[in-house]
Amino acid sequence: MEWIKEWIHHFPALRAWLTAGAVTVATTLVLYVFKKFVVNKLRALAQRTNAQIDDVIADLLDRTRFWFYLAVSLYFGAHVAALPSQVMGPLRAAVIILMFLQVGIWSNGLLSFWLDRYRERMISQDPAWATTVTAIGFVSRLAVWIVVVLLALQNLGFKVDTLLAGLGVGGIAVALAVQNILGDLFASLSIVLDKPFLIGDFITLDQLSGTVEYVGLKTTRIRSLTGEQLVISNSDLLKSRIRNYKRMQERRVVFLLNVEYDTPQEKLVKIPEIIREVVEAEEQARFERAHFKEFGAYSLVFEVVYWVTNPNYMTYMDIQQRVNLGIMRRFQEESIHFALPLQRFDLRTDSRTDRPLPLAEKE
Image 1 (tube, rainbow, N blue to C red):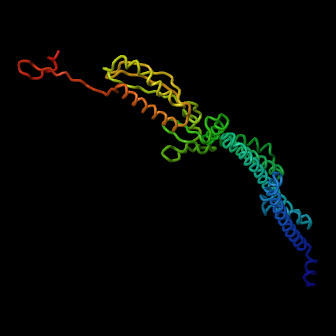
Image 2 (image 1 turned 45 degrees about the horizontal axis):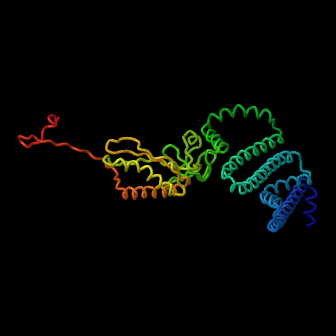
């Protein structure tokens, strides 16, 4: 062993490298064990308390990567061993990059921790926050990583002002190339801020309809009545005329009744009152009017209007069914008959031959 010590003593560079390696390994192990110990203690503490600070610290420590410990330990070991400047320069640049990368991961984790808990707290009060928080999270993370990259470049000696000027010119070209994607992104922000619909709303746009399941940064996903999922870009969605049935407070029902021409006048007068009684028998219906509207081609036409005060579609259909059955029952009791489309043909015969006259001779 003496010859090894003597050999190391005669080669200072080798001794420095061995010292740096030993310090690096020892520091890495200490930091890693310390992280595990602290995280376990904080996790146990978080289960016994309602405070969030221990959860935040534990989450951030858990997001600390092993290569970060290694980079810090390597830089510390290189300083202790006083390695030459030719080594310290590149090593310093690598450590700066890794440190800022870890700072970006910490910042992203802090944002995610806060946004997830804020979403859980607000989603029960306002479902629109599910989309709002998603958009805020995307913009916030993008801003964090831009700041981290710029700070890392500045610490590496780059002139950030010149770089920003160049990025401004290049950004115009990039914006033109990805204008469709940017259009969907800004449309997503418009949906978040203007809130024409929320997750869970039943909407109709053009010939498509369904329940909104997800609003993303580029597309919105709708579950149609027939079961399939409709994926529509946000920009196309905002160009359409959207009907939001979830925000309907009442449903207006309008329909026509056709009765026979030979219905007696005293029964025609009763029809509006019969309809009023049938509609007002429903607790969740409000009668508006019933009128003898016009003389139809084959019937006397009555127009009926009433409101269903519950916007639920199944409730509306149940009430409409009961109203229709009630009108039919009352008409049968009053011997009022619905009219059917009929055509009458007047056939006249020639008294001399008992043959039908040609159509031109009937008049």
